[in-house]
Image 1 (cartoon, rainbow, N blue to C red):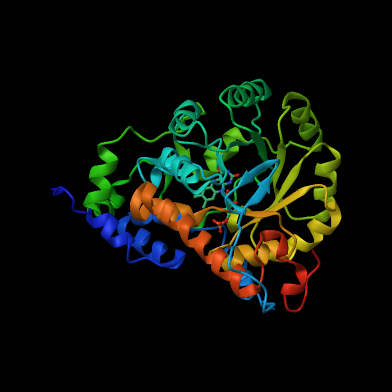
Image 2 (image 1 turned 30 degrees about the vertical axis):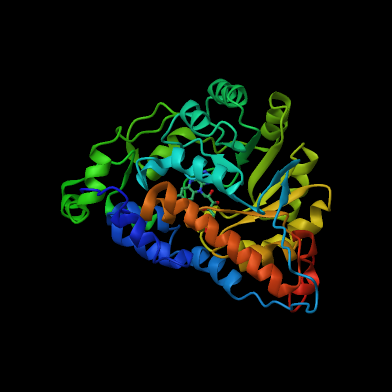
Length: 391
Ligand code: FNR
């Protein structure tokens, strides 16, 4: 497309019409071929848990305090000893270059611009080096799937440490792949190959196609695997025999902050902390793994109670607005992570779209805090939930 000097592109014009994460999702849907959109948007089985996550946050009931000085709102929050601009971070998302050719590089730059942490996935489609170089000063964490090959896993972890990834996040809820029906029906493989029946769908998105063909071929940048269906791929790499003893081992090889992601049971959270975790992420993988898993909003209070105040507790799954972030804080989370919201942004408009998603969350949080009578995130307390929840 011809770009006249000083004129904004059609993509950035379209972005300005988006005001909610749902708007970004609609735009993402329009600008991306169906199999790609479905891979990102979908979940396991009949997607009960995907809906449960979002509905739980949508159903939150808030009890504001009034006549408090909210002329200055401070959304700053701590993540494992580092101050962030907001109590949210960008969750690990495999193969982000499916959403946009700039993929993980755009995501880490967006995180830097927003002043929030970014977790790079083991299933990254950009190299650990390239992501580090794209935003050296961003708060970069690395997410690990423990592979059957422990020597290779350890080498990857050490490589991440050398490149300045500050925290290690062990994802614990993928002993085997969840059943992703949309992907199975679309014939989606990872890295993607496009069956002939997809050609028509791709042709409907010439801009996406041109962008994708002009960029590096998609692949797993940190793994050496062949192409296959999602379940096939994951099961080739993942180790279903992983236990808490492996967490103890990871604690012995990683000296920085260690986080366990995918915890829903209070007993598992306690055990993770006993084995040396500095934080846990209450997560059901965005409803992409166990069907009918509990909504993360419902699992949060039990985990918070179990680990007490000394361990940081984060939550992800279904968070789509600043109001949801405020509610999560009030319910006992130190901070939250978001997955699809920034990836919808990437699909809708690359880095600018991801930043726009983050700004929606940020400004929404500021407004909600003012309306709740909470000038700082520490003022978001369980009494602001009706009925009050444990915090
Ligand atoms: C994920 N998620 C994920 N988690 C992880 O630990 N490693 C990974 O590689 C991936 N990959 C991935 C791909 C895609 C397309 C999605 C949507 C999600 C899960 C992710 O980190 C997070 O837990 C959820 O996305 C949170 O739910 P919401 O915010 O998407 O509702």
